[in-house]
Amino acid sequence: MPALDPRPLTGEPVSLDLLNTRWMSDGVRQDLLTGPEGLRTWLVSNGLDRRFPADAAALEHLLLAREALAVAVDDPGGAAGVEGVNAVLGQGRIRATLTPEGPGEVAEFDDPSWGAAWTAARDYLDLLRTAPDRIRGCAHGACILHFFDTSRNGTRRWCSMAACGNRAKASRHYARTRAG
Image (cartoon, rainbow, N blue to C red; front, side):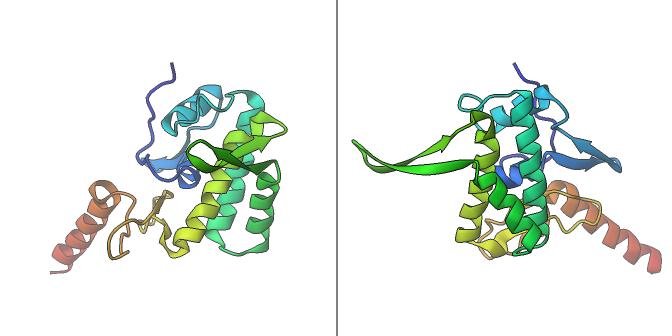
């Protein structure tokens, strides 16, 4: 059984959740994906543990996808990000199907160890189709987390109001009281 997920922000769409496998804690960068246990934790957190392997090849492919997504999110439309995400997407394909419930799709991979990485890259395309302007990095200067802004008016700035948002408000308050 994998350990509890130690990350401060979970539950984001799978592409951004993959980016959030790196975070800052007391000024030190943390990384969930340093080995098979972290990979299993991430797969379980995203409901992918029954579909995809948690082996060394899957971890290597997931790390490649994370780097490609980081470049794509930091420089939307940039050649390096496009190329990196496309390289991951090239490892799988969608097969259209007809099921008793109606039309469907099935993801297929020549190598199943690409499954989780491909799923994260495909999710990024879905976010771009939905609302690319709502893919955000936390506004706190020391935070490296990402989120998909689902707020009604689209003005979310922080990964968490309880953590980064509160720190920013406390810093502003401290600055005001010091200046006064």
